Image 1 (cartoon, rainbow, N blue to C red):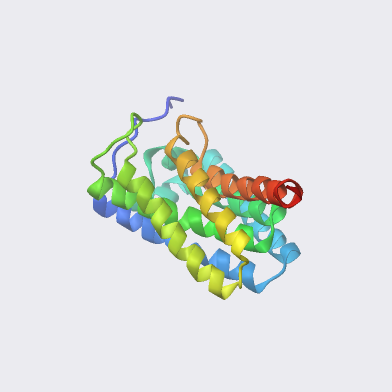
Image 2: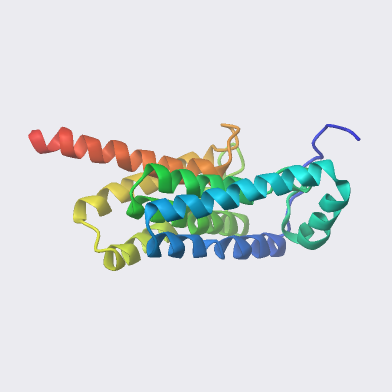
Length: 217
């Protein structure tokens, strides 16, 4: 068997919709994080991550298991996922690191941005994207990412009673995450990691600047 990665095939728009709708069901993790504490969330999500990594390794060792994966999930798998890790591995790692490193509010918003911002960026970009960047991403997709993320930020502001400064810093961090999303492939990274971690790190840096620099001016 060749070790070369098969060429990536473009998803049809209908396939992309199915894939993104499946991803949106991951919002259950955000609800779980909201309802539980940091330790429990890390434990459960970490366990799921390890279990999925083991399952993927077993698929590599036993081709029959990989055939089952392809048989049942082929419509929503990209070509590289059929012989490698599914994106859910990186999603769970992104969730785990977000909960581990950041506050509950930052983790929830970062993961929500990943789930819905990224999904709408792809769907809007594929259907309405006319102003393309050099890497094929579109301005329309990026604006869709930011717009949907801001809507969830507004909803969370009421649900979680977020402070005004938190909201302002979140807007800046959402834009930062959107910019990183554009260039994730060039960075040879996975957006399931780069989006929530960029948002969280940006929030941490901006909060530090506000509390240690700006308030003392």
